[in-house]
Length: 125
Image (tube, rainbow, N blue to C red; front, side, top):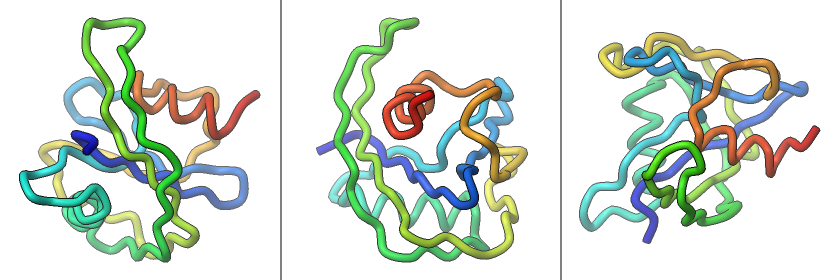
């Protein structure tokens, strides 16, 4: 099982991103899986914590990614889900971790390494 889950939601040429307070990098929303929690349950819990007003439609697993990060010695172990629908206000729930949420074009924004990987595969130039 993947260690964490990420959400990819797109509409009108933009993707849903959240900005980490710690380093001000943007990323696809999601987080770490807890023991005995499925990847999909993890994602639903993380979205409820981070963006409590957001309502998701059906979630479809796009890919499980296990890779070494190019710019650090860390490893990626993520289940990436695509939401068919995402609606609601982008109110921040966990203000200690995230300071912004917005619909952005996938290029021209500083992303975390994992989010760059996802963007480059789902939204090639």
